[in-house]
Length: 292
Ligand SMILES: Nc1ncnc2c1ncn2[C@@H]1O[C@H](COP(=O)(O)OP(=O)(O)OP(=O)(O)O)[C@@H](O)[C@H]1O
Ligand SMILES: [Mg+2]
Image 1: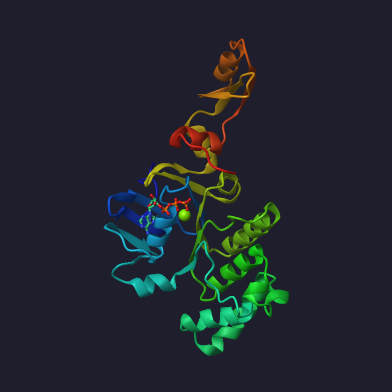
Image 2: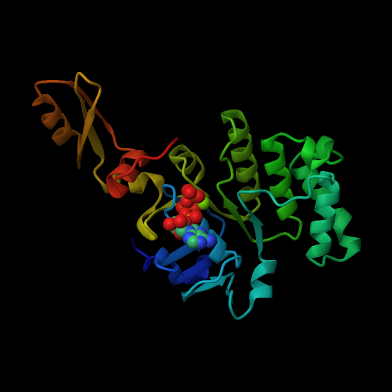
């Protein structure tokens, strides 16, 4: 991990040495994190890795034992209210009132953010137009599909024009069509400069959506970079040898020539030489597989 190359002034989130314990369990084990202004940053890791704990710490929802977090220059312990005005939070389990309409939920959210009434309707109209939510605004949350509930939660979290949006596992449980629509929405959010910090255990999501990815395992960041950088961290090329039982062995090489030479020396099994990908990096570094 190369933190030195990042200027802290370019970062909306600067976290240092974050430690969080639940009794004997170390959920987050002394991590450093810099999230750049305007990027989509993905926190990828298997179940129990510490993703939710970290995102909750950064977004002031969970306390921590050691370390410091700045959000847009505000220390979240010393200036929590200032920090909170800069962020929008969408937890895995949506916290909208299911008996109210999307419009009513957004309005309540705006009041909770202490927005002046005169500004609320203008801002809501702006969001509804930008995110094409018009026909859904009068629907009760309970009547929406999972994907649209999530969209409503995200758009509501944007009401006070936060600079950074935290999303914990935004697309878990959604079908692929709803997942893609949500990716579009997240890109649209990001297009106007909003920084996105999301967690995911879908490698594809990290690969397709994120500018940079941190891989977390057992509470530690084991790799950090663009999906391409992470893939090449273990070697640019992979040789996959699959035996008659369908079991595959992987080896990684710096260049295609060495990979091809190794591949051509294999006498049994099916040999595939290809570029490495984020999944290779994930499995190699964590020793675990994730669903995708
Ligand atoms: N409230 C809690 N009390 C006790 N232990 C907890 C609590 N929350 C999390 N943990 C533990 O901390 C570790 C990290 O959990 P966390 O929920 O942050 O992981 P995660 O990466 O979000 O996992 P998942 O993919 O399952 O959502 C796990 O060992 C978990 O059991
Ligand atoms: Mg989680």
